[in-house]
Each structure stands twice: as C-alpha cells, then as structure tokens.
Image (tube, rainbow, N blue to C red; front, side, top):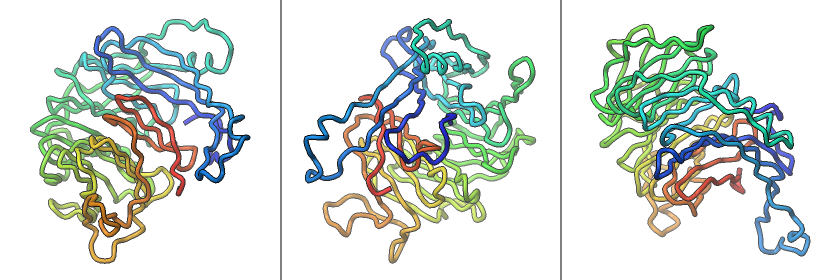
Length: 355
C-alpha cells in the first residue's frame, strides 16, 4: 500500500512496486523498488485509434535497487507499513528490509542513496523456502516456511524480531505457501507438496487443528478471502484450483473445482475488495481472472479450453497472455482491477477491459 489514496480510478495513474530477481549468478541478484507514473489508458478498439494516440506518452519507470544474497524466492510487504519488506533467499536466509529511503529517493532527483542493509536476518531454516506471509491483524508478525517442512513464527519486539526456534510440525514434505487468517490473529493456513492444506493455531505447535487431502499433486499456493473469511483458494501441480469453505473443511469436498489451466498453478489471489473475484497464474503461460458469482448452470466443476464456446467456463472473465514462466500475480490493493504479474520474461501491469 502507498500514500497516494484508495480506489484510484483517474488516469494517468501512479503506483509503487517492489520485486526481486532470480539471476543465473547469485551475486547479480537485486531487489527493485519502483515508481511507475504516467500510466495511461490504452485504446480498446482499432476504431478508436487516431493521430492523437501518437501523442500519448509512455509510462515512466524509476527504480532503485539493492543487492540481495541469492535469488529472491519470495518477497512480501508488511500490510501496515509498506516500506518494510521481507525476502526469502535460496541461500536459506530470510531478510527484513526498510526501504523508506529508497521510496523517498524515487520522489526526488537525488541519485545519492545510502547502502541498504537488512533490519534483521534469520538463518535458522535448514534449506531454502518459498512460503512467506505477513499478518494483517498483528503488526510485524511474520510466518516463514521452507522445503524441509519447517514453519517459523516471527513476532516484532523492540530490538527487532523474536523467532521461536521450535517450528510448527505436521507436514511431511515441503511447505509451499502460508496464509494468515484475515480475522483471527492466531490462525494461519499452510500448503505443502505432501498434497495437503493444514489450518494451525499459533498456540499449538505440535499438530494442526485441521487438515485435508486437497489435491492429487503438490499444493503450491493459497489465498484466504479477505472479505469472506470462510473461503480459501488452493492451486496445485495437478493444473487445477479449488475453492474451500472452511465451515465444511473435509478432504475431497471443495465447493469449487476448476480444471481450466493446462499447467501447474503458480500463483493465486482473491481480489482485495470483490469477494467473488480472483486471479490465477499457470505454467501454461496464461493468467486468468474469474468471477465466481457467475455460477455455472449445472456444476461448479468446469472443463478446460477446447476451442468451442461451450468449453469456456461461465465464471472466466479475462485471460492475459504474452508472458513466459509466470511466477506471481497480485491485484493492486488501491487501484481497482489492476493486476501486476512477474515472469521470466519480465513484469506486466494491466487492467482487464471488463473489470
């Protein structure tokens, strides 16, 4: 989140972004803090093209960077203070950074920026990991999970962060994603390559409160609905994504099962303000946007692409193509309908025409 206001719809737009690299050489990796301004609305129809369109200026991208020790497996900004970000590295370390000086430098013409050093570094994970999530209910509270099934809880203290060295135990394989409950400060969910989803209470480390056999393959990603806290999304290597009702949380009983994509699901997120809308990214190099309020006539289980109009799921609103190896997507929390996606081929920022 940034200080530019909520529900921004007027063009030209401006926003701040942060992302990390996965370079072939470890010492070439960086974290990028960016300001994107002069974002103009594009034409939706060839008939709208005119000579005046040639006069529209391109977006302006300003970026400040700092070195990162190894590939950035995942990056998250603290909801209560967006200048504080956490990164997970393939070096097994987890870092917390304060980027306020970089954000300030983006708003000035000064090129002089002091070196960026971590506020805190945790080296307790035995292997690298990808699971990382800040709490939206407790400022500074963080979860990290690794590929050896360990989950650690961080709590903010005056001197930095206090991390309980006893991990949460329950999964039998890599922890792929973590999600805090949007309403319960001590409850979180985890997804694993052991094909399960688990619901935890931070006051109980030895066993999860609930778990389900969620998919036929690795569960890669989760998203907890911020508006309807009984709903959760999961995406898997089995190419499908599911919708779960936590009030009836049992194996093989999702309230929605979607088989549209042709590759593993790499990212998934509920819309921050529209409780039935979501976006999904896949290794099939597509990103889809859905509205689950548009129910199918017969069943919530829908088929994939087949070339015929009847094969298109009624809940599917938009498909974004053109990127290779999409890694992550995010709805902008303050600019309605805007999606940011990162991929091996670069970063895209777009707003579907029907949102």
